[in-house]
Picture (cartoon, helix red, strand yellow):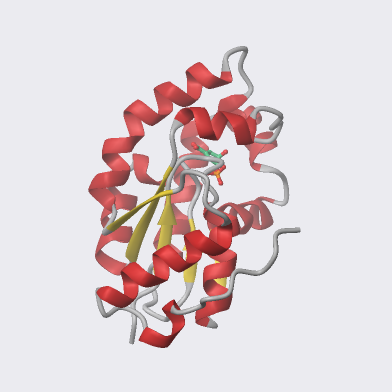
Length: 188
Ligand code: S3P
């Protein structure tokens, strides 16, 4: 049975959007760990973070990652950007999943997230500076945890999904025909 695929990377790097489409192509279930956490908390991550603080959030995130990786059934998991901060999460993800790092520069992320109000770590006066700090600290951790690195740059979601599928096919981790989709749908 193929291992679950976990997408990791900075906030705004497209983990949820790419993950959802990747799951559709594979005909596998898709799970978003942040959405699961919010469902369990019954409130937004931002509200919880503001009240209880980052460490409490990381504890809950760690149990969600532990749970999502505890069964080997095929699925695509989009993780939160900070999931790789804890050694236990890196270990669980790397040993039980095929881990794909969606790597984007802080400048690209800033372009996508400049109007964001939901990510607690970015509600600061200099979000680009914060993204640079987070990237500097996390990029080595994402690399350590991942089996594949995909540079997101400017390709469409469709192209990114094809790039991931091609890598996984070459490594014999998904059936070959899934990686071939010659026609890109028109952008809306
Ligand atoms: C976080 C990223 C968020 C969410 C939380 C903390 C982070 O997820 O888990 O706000 O530490 O980078 P996304 O990467 O989906 O934005």
